[in-house]
Length: 334
Length: 272
Image (cartoon, rainbow over all chains, first blue to last red; front, side, top):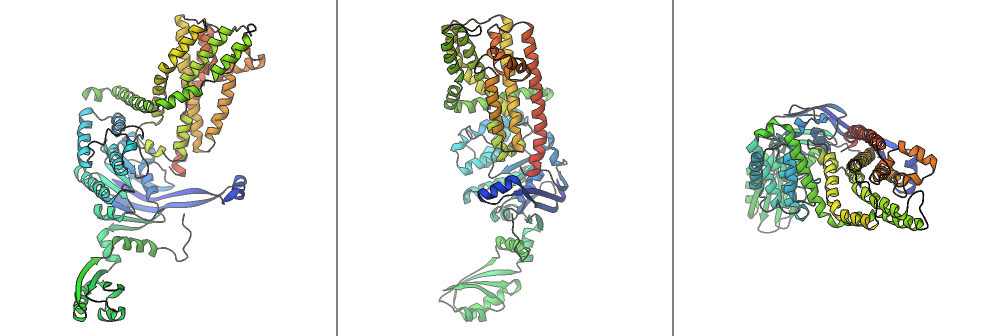
């Protein structure tokens, strides 16, 4: 459904020093440098697949989505989405995709969401019965009751996002690009949006590509994850496999009956290492195979009140992946 | 449903209706603003008072006080019917990236602007129509109410609005390359104010100006439609004016088309 081969996007950036002198200098002689936003990225998505796209700010996530949606033209490489070359922006292509940007909107600010829906119905040529059926379904799935007739500017951020999603899906696209769909939303609303995306993917077999720096979005929705950093794809695969591969340990949270000295704790719990120990609480990092052994040793040496084992948080794994690949010189990032 | 599938033009019609409905709803939200815009276009009424004062001593270049009243009331009307603001919207949309969501839909975003301008005119007509008619009656204006003059006037006003829209849209598209698109439009506006007949009837201008100005698009935006309804331009001159206006409109339709294509390529290159 989606295929990228050696995709590359270079921006030409105009540099200017701060202040009046800088402006004058820039007026006479413009300085430019090339910023490689997407560098040699290749991957494929099959129909119906749902993939998370992770990376720090400025890593190239949004640029990649815009290249896939045809808003940007690649500087090199090939892109194919639903059998089309996005940059040509053919009508049939635009009808089969949607791109929802968390901080851009298509709904008309001064009108009700349903006013924009009616225009979209006419643009995408959706016959009335089909339109009403889809609108009914989206209203049900997103809980839009009572929102569609309100002026968009009077909706809360979460309500507006739900209406944006509905507006973007009335033409039932085969491919969904979601760029930070939960940005600024509270936890309950994030959950609702995620569940909707999962339902939609399941019901209509749509291919979904979702960027977020909210790890919750990605862990909830996608098994497969792409991690991009400074324009380069640094990981493509199963999220759980990533955690196992990158974090071959588990976390042990222990509560003791009385404060324990860090040194005695360290001695008792080998081969685990102490990540933190404060008062009666301690967090240990334990190699996967040694959890039982360490727990046994702790129980033998101290009075343990409570004990929880956890996976290393995905955030940490991804952060390590991104930071780990960084050159030690710490080159300036755009 | 079947009828719609068989006849794609029915969808075009539905789209036009949907866009107009959307724009009309938007414009009714801006009732107060529209009233302010109408007032801000009242320069011709000031010019009317000025010229009527001068003509109180006796006719100027064949215009008596009543003729000036009729001329400037109609100038006021024509300018109200051809007011255009797309440069402000588009310049902003291009520079702030607000164009992106619009480019994702399989429709040229221009049509939404067309609908906005049409809907706004529909709201303006009843607000200014009555006062203008009342003014013409009070000034005892002599209009040429022959069907050909009336039809010529209507077609020329619609043509003027179209010409102005495509000219301003073309200028707005320069925002893809420069942040001075609005500045350039301001320059055009100043020249237009002088050469379109908004400050004085063009036949009062000195000969060299009168010789050159018919080759520019400016007189066809204000002076020519007004003079047709006043009966001062008649017969084949009307047809000729229509042709020149059409030619200029085609020039700007083509300019907007070429700038749009080139602009989108640039937008896609530097970052949407």
